[in-house]
Image (cartoon, rainbow, N blue to C red; front, side, top):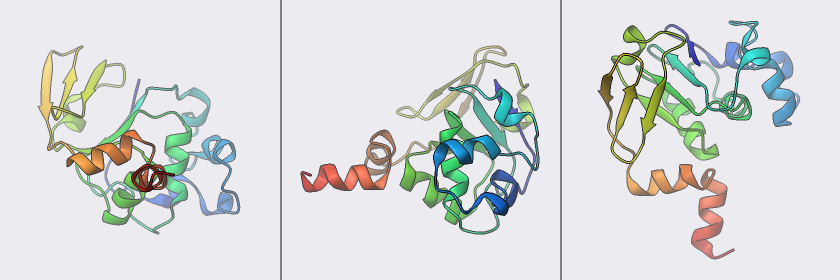
Length: 159
């Protein structure tokens, strides 16, 4: 399933400030997106996608926002653009995020999509449409695949 949102989805609606006293991913996922979509935490499934417009993750620089999304089981966030600090926080924790300017305007909630990080495309199987994006550099790809910066650094250091 695709969870489709508009522009300027800020970190305060991704995870409301009233829940920032916890770093527990199970707690965070229970409240993810609740101020913009009351159905999200009850209905999101592992492997779902968030599709959004411009400036996803704007607002405060809290790492809780990408943590809540990742804990919810979202496979990737695909948006027209991301706030820079959200983008970096997402990479640091191993949340897959992809910039694409076309898909949000051409997707329905029930469309089945395939994401190929290696070759830089999103394939909408339902509509037989392909959308390209710039793949991550090799180091960033490795960091995301290993679960984020901490695990990537441990491996590089031989820990």
